[in-house]
Length: 163
Image (tube, rainbow, N blue to C red; front, side, top):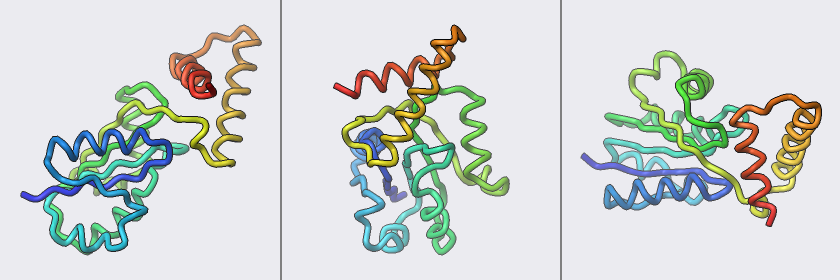
């Protein structure tokens, strides 16, 4: 059975996971952006492992992969995503339900891994969004409201990556 590992990564965390998986399988990890011929890779693949970062509950690049998949006879698709939330059944269900149609649930496996970000590597819009998120969480903390573990984690990652 031939496997392919393809990823889309803005901050480098998804790429790290893709590289680790590809190394274990003795295959190359391919950046979706750098693939000029996705169909060429998929035509010779039985199992596709796709990784994309999670942005506003959407998996980056997944629509392109699912669209290309319809033209090929893949036996299995495994999708992993990285994000800032802690892993939980609730988080995985929300990601699954928001990214896959119900009929795809049986043929696609989904995994969630904790990611992070390097603030310096973010684009202008993403930097603004992260600053707004930090401000919102900071205001909640200032009001004396308790922060969720996700919010505490996001603040910690944010502070760590400003250095």
